[in-house]
Image 1 (cartoon, helix red, strand yellow):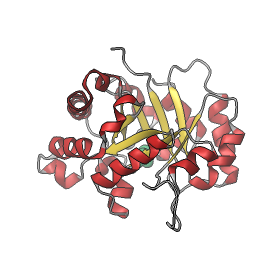
Image 2: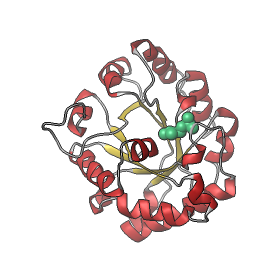
Image 3: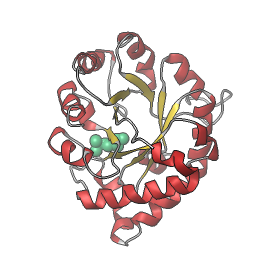
Length: 247
Ligand code: 13P
């Protein structure tokens, strides 16, 4: 089974206004020669405008969350179908900021993942341990349980990625060592193969947490790292392109 094409996805989180589309356009303009798939996941308010602004470019657009239901009385929520309708082709699910701030469980993340598939979106499912869990020697067990609980069997015939984002590395400037990243990614790979058979080998396993141009090459060339999910450094085109070029 050939290695999956690397995916570099920028998670803008709750940042960005219409004026920020210029950064997205600058990313699209700087992609010549890159071998990676590149995605930007802005706030839902920007998806349609970004889809329009980046039309005809290779940059994919993703949502940051979706509801598990296709429609209904869920004030303030966004359905996967609505993300797709606005121009998204991917969606980040189970980010630790959703798990911690909105009480998202593995079961809910799995339900959202099913919703994404129904809408034709490619899920990027996030997992990762807290600092306390790492210090207690529980990182591999926590991540394995999250992968098992968050990935529904329906993913078997669909494109998706898993993002390993240690909670303590997000927005902190701290990153695990390369052997620590490889240990978790190899464990995720084994779990994917256990769940999906040979198809589990074709799933890109992204790393996320304080990825920047200066550490991207080492992280992206580590064993079983198939791309990156980038927060802060994806907000500036020059930094994001620096990471993309490190693939
Ligand atoms: P930072 O790159 O800002 O650490 O954020 C990582 C992240 O949470 C991406 O989803």
